Length: 201
Image 1 (cartoon, one colour):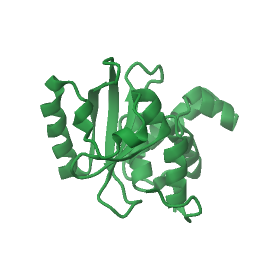
Image 2 (cartoon, rainbow, N blue to C red):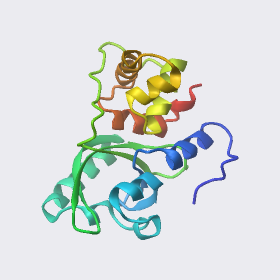
Image 3 (cartoon, rainbow, N blue to C red):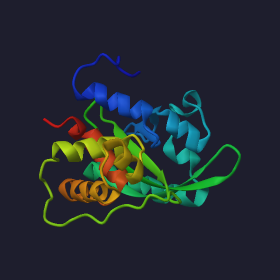
């Protein structure tokens, strides 16, 4: 169950982004079972929250991908982070190919993973990260941009929101990718949300 929105600090911000983001997100336990999903997850994959919570992620994988996905999840459990691609079978039998990133999160006080998904056909391309910045803290402006990316905005939408150029937004994203050691937007969002970096501090 989600904590109330009156929760202080970045926990409240986490849940606000989780619920409102256009990026499909899920919280998953150590047994690879769904604990919660956001509305965007329901929209992309076609299954309501009450049907999904308590089931396993690999329940929706094509049979020939189950073993590989379980292996990937074991790798995540060893390292605390993982990203890759997988297929998801919708209720009507259609299959969507997604990129996903998993990061151990610290919000709930439980040993859960935050999964962020992105359709591989999404026209928004990930930016190649700038080198040499791994481990540096995000600047206030970078956190602002990443928060909007976490909400599911494209670079163009972020630029319009902040009244800056698209190239300026892409530069901030490249810098954020480099500082967090991530390579895709899904990884970036999973990490900053899971570790509370959206709120700075």
